[in-house]
Length: 77
Image (cartoon, rainbow, N blue to C red; front, side):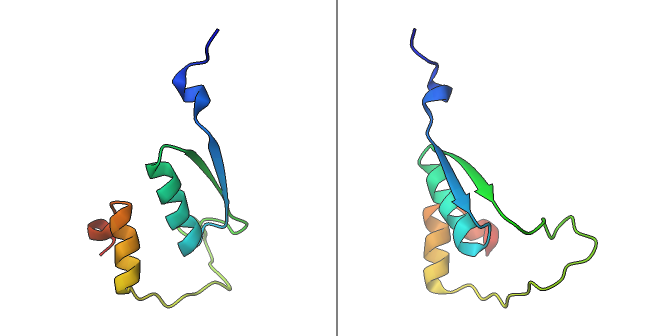
């Protein structure tokens, strides 16, 4: 008996939910993979106190091009 299509989908594990991990997850998902992201830190959107993690973020041309490839440039910009 052949398995349904959803069971044939390969799973990609991305370790690290930072800028690069999140973008890689988007690329894999766009190509039809099931993506699971593993991040050691808690979700800062849900944390009561955020400590020890701060980044200065500027959106470069190269970054915008990467976001454009996954269909997120306008939403992020």
